[in-house]
Image (tube, rainbow, N blue to C red; front, side):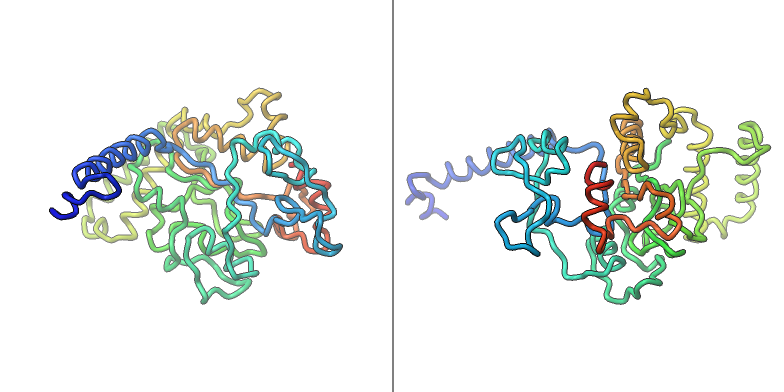
Length: 329
């Protein structure tokens, strides 16, 4: 070290090198503090959005490889996107395109698990892969684990978790972290027997006075059995009760979910589709203090939902669905 300091390194002595590293560390810490995100809205277009028809049309490739859509110029020189998304082309200066992400699976269930948890699970059986408490937690549940409890939940999934044909996909909730850290789900997966994890309204015949009385009764009963309180599952359930009580008893929390409070012009701008209105709801939630909101693509057409929400699983109808609905939305 002494010799290195005496010899210098490209004209920079060891004290100068260490001083530069210290200055860089201070700058990095300041930058991290300045750029620390307070919230995240994760738009998950599940089902497989076609990259070759959205971001990389390959217009010079032979037929059968190039897209039938045309690339259009965007706000950023050198970045072209599909001509079916002209409004998105106007905000590409706020978008970072990551072209290096891929995974080897072409199975929806395994791919959803991988992209939402960061882990691969070769034991998943398609299509009957119900989510289990042995699963790894998804992003939102990890944030819930690290977030102190408050009036608003730390993670919300809208309009509902991913699934179809009675199966809620693995990787969509807290897994081994336990139900205490599950994302708030307002609706169940399509055709699923699961119940939503939270309710926003009181049951019929129960006003807020009765709710408070019931809460006191619960605490009285729990105090009679401390051994039961020490059980892990009961602790998680108690935390869920507390979160539910904070939600239904707090008018501000309930207002966050009332999308009809938005001006009609704002709702029109987001699009009167389930996905568009879910994005608007996500904005309301982060404005009211929810740190993480996952918006799952959910098809607007009820006839298709009756047979299961296929998301972006277009198959042979890809160009028609892209042009008629999904790309414009």
